[in-house]
Length: 249
Image (cartoon, rainbow, N blue to C red; front, side, top):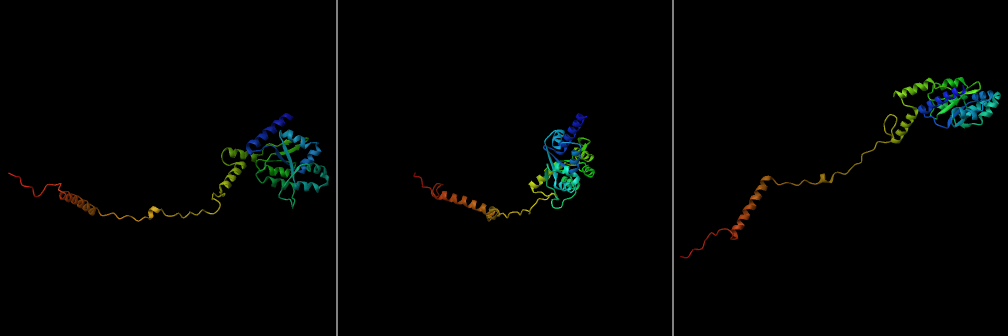
């Protein structure tokens, strides 16, 4: 029976590792009801949880869970156990609330910090099954049990596989990339719009256009040049003489 329970736990942990990015050390949020059940069934939480989950763990609780045990004298033993764990900051430091409400608020609707939750509270258990990606630990008789993934978790994994939605880890990566690129959630870029710099005009376009002479005048000047050249040749004596010298008989 113990081997079967260990295999089932290994399968469930693999489900959360591959689909919800859980990594060691596993963070386990524990409340007073779990400590009271462990005390009653003589379970050493610090020794048995790492063996059962087959990895390193960090046992933690909240200030509200501590305050709740302080007000109940019958749970003094559970209080001594809970005091040995790390206390995580919650939103109710000044005004403590019930431990059940505090634990649910720590998950923030999507369990971004990848908490395991160890509790015997039925109200907390019902609330956890509505949040995807939350492993639940509880005690049955004298054994710790890791519950199977809830239907909410399985449905989200199936939706991701079909491409209908993204995982919280993927959404977090998308949001971080948007912040790097300076893009808001609606697709607009942050900050003021960039003004176009006023560039100087092209210096070539500022030059005055040269006046070209008419085509007819250009032809006349070429004709004049030819005539002047011909006159120079005749004046120099290179051409035939107008008064030839008489031949002696």
